[in-house]
Image (cartoon, rainbow, N blue to C red):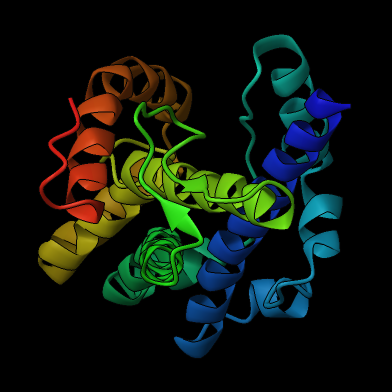
Length: 232
């Protein structure tokens, strides 16, 4: 039963975080002139349109990864018009940045709620940190569940924010690069991305590199959350 409850907590946080990430991409694209995702019904926090588009990445893989490894991974996506992206590379870059920005907003929300809980003396910093255990409740029950959810909200969205900023395709970081290029160079760059099979290799490289980056970044973030505690 404990494993089932933990798995449900993981999935709720994962699905909400992933849905907000993709809905933010879709909203930014719609506001900037590409209605593809809007017409597909993905400018929404309702997870069902996102699940229907990527059922393997939003349901099957997250559940299997938790059952087999005790943690959750997965993916989702929204459609966009590649011709629009090439025509307006700066707008395309803003669309790419919108997803990680949504995850950063959730990290900051978790920070606000954790600090509020500590001030109210219903939460406190733990003696030992893990990915899913960065705050504890003073009493068992609902606040204990809230502490678990807030820990996951903080750690998982920090992971999604940092991982997606890696500048390799198909991650969002590669789509942000045109913002810093001239118009013509950005167009050539996007044409290369759209016609290159680099996505698989990019994910492989990102996964290998990120394993060395996340733990120290997570530790820095937690020490910013708890000034003076000097976790290591």
